[in-house]
Image (cartoon, rainbow, N blue to C red; front, side, top):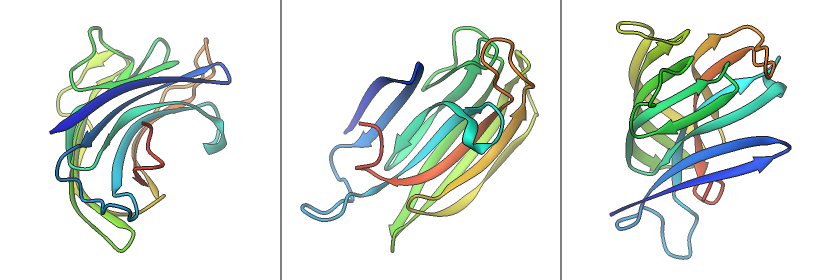
Length: 173
């Protein structure tokens, strides 16, 4: 059985939205042992360099998740969900992630993704990829980058699709 929770967190005037999907029955964590790692797939906006992180939204899963992540309103707002946004976002992706194995502080996942919107237009046949990745707990990898130029509203210069492996205790709950 899966448990789905949506949480919104405000930090320093920014809003973070994280959709968390966790396996309730049959979890691979051991009672009293370390928490089972999960994969997080997030859309992140940046104002300037990597230290200019603005906003993040995405999905976390210990099993399998399919959904969409996007940025809208001049790339100032980010969201993720299991269905397409109601209106065309500035940029966005369709993605699917499946956890294959967990061992020795690593998570092996199969990820498929495609850029679904670019400059507010639905795209077919745009940038895409699929493959297996091995991530150490705490590691982050960039999947796709869209340079959006400085946003008049919030200064966002790029939007990225990123994947990371985290312990469930570090994931948004």
